[in-house]
Length: 150
Image 1 (cartoon, rainbow, N blue to C red):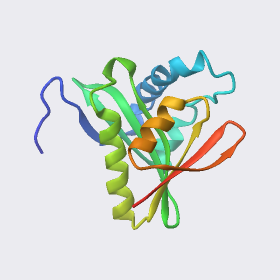
Image 2 (cartoon, rainbow, N blue to C red):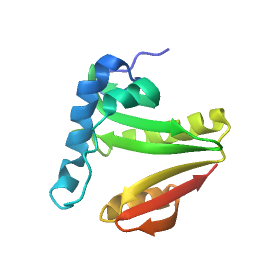
Image 3 (cartoon, rainbow, N blue to C red):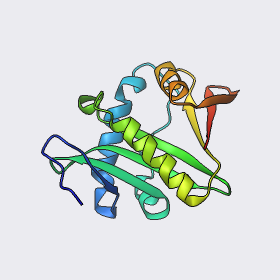
């Protein structure tokens, strides 16, 4: 395995000891939404359980966790539960790398699609997912269900 340079991200499976740093990263990534979305759930809640029971990946730069991905394997699909990049590391392609990793893992699992839920007021996320080949399939209240066929 090639070691990343100080400004490159190392993407690896999360470990139990990563929970606090990953929760901090997730909370930082969602802070801009919390200010404008009153019903945004606590997005980092339960990250310890996610690491123990789901597939969780982190991206590190210089030993600091700066992004994360949480996914759950279903029967014929994978649920992308959470993806987050610390704001100061946005625009470097980390989110896209993590989405690509989710696709690789889903294919390896034999899944035919990936599913996710996002908030209707996160229009920029819906736009990004649409550009990446996702389709909106349903809206329930403020929840938007999107899928991507593999």
